[in-house]
Image (cartoon, rainbow over all chains, first blue to last red; front, side, top):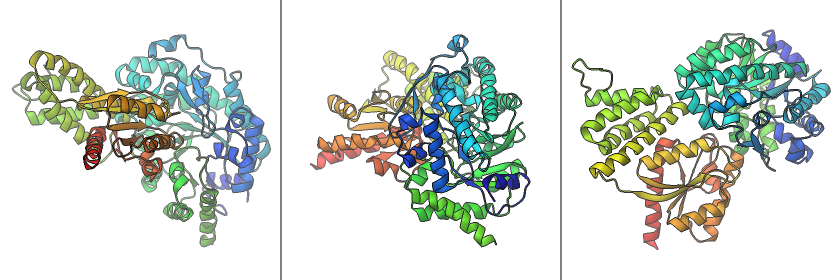
Length: 341
Length: 235
């Protein structure tokens, strides 16, 4: 059974030969091929070679396009700093205040160099592996985009103290977010992952979630023509799943290591895909035996849940994570399948 | 002043305390400000900070209904504290209310780290607790932290980082302190969301202490300051 067949089983609510497992190994793949991060984040062919190495080394059931959220900020005019041992970050936001959004042109996903890189890398990974392994791409939901364009402080300030301005910003951002997601589907993405920091209890109040974040997500997701998986980003998400259930186009959720998965399943119903497992910062320093134990415990928790995927949470796997920890992750899935037979 | 919550229009101290916690939890900066002004009109701004805002922030820091507070609530708490600082500065000048300055301390984001929000909120909370803060901003080289601490006589350097990758650059600050024979005398506080999920990261980067959130930062800095003094006294 290949990974695509496992996904088809999962969608049909049937148990496959074993659990699917995955983790974003975007920057990690550069280490596998000995590629500099500068080349990795600029050359789609180099990126695709990295994902091939990931598949050969760890065989995850889902591969990823480049995890490079700073590129979305760059597309709006923010400046990013590139490093030799980690992913780029936005260093200077494009604008400083909500009023400046009016003069800000929306980026063209077909023409902006950073978005072209992201999409071409995705297309290459799909072309090479997509017939057997689903390929996902990690983007950001419209509610998280302003943080990359005006800075987190200014976005939070606007959202908290000038709601009409925040809504006007969303009027501009939502068509772009939907368009970029749709173009990634056209490029072959099996699903799009959206971080939803500004819908998580760690970021916003229930009032903001209900009155602002959810309506924006409903509006944008209704324009998206493919499955979207919503990602917790930083903090546990389960406390807000009652409000986030039933959103259009949403196939599932990536939940945090500390999230209560039984409660999540109750709140979301049987059809939603749940992805969860150890957090990437934790995996960087944990012992392989501990990684295996945490994975095993998570798998036990979801033993009879056909729509669960063991996945690392919180973000891209750190480049200095011991390979043994990633192998332990995979081993837990294989041994769990053996025990079930 | 505030919309009456009590039949005779007066708010009891207990009700004000509860209302302030509720206002900050709702991220309602305006209402929180009204309540603090109401208290200050009767007791003065120094008391409004010490007897009302500080306990409210501690209560919020312990969590509401066992849920941790959100970034939005923390941001509003910092804004309310900042508002209080501005108002109380005027009040101190007019009414000779005095608060003893603490510090100075040095604050900044680790080299290659550009996530300013957490650092700014910590700076606000420290200042509102009476600390003199020298904020060096984003992407600060290790030597600059130590140079500034020596220059202003700081016993605590606080370094913020958002990711493991940038947190590891804090090791350079520790190396710099060690190389100049300042470890112990100058304490190294580290913080950022990543320290909550990456076990052992504080020790790995050479931090002397960390706090789970910005509301705990004044307590951490006070503890580290005292530790630095004890180290100095013992020499």
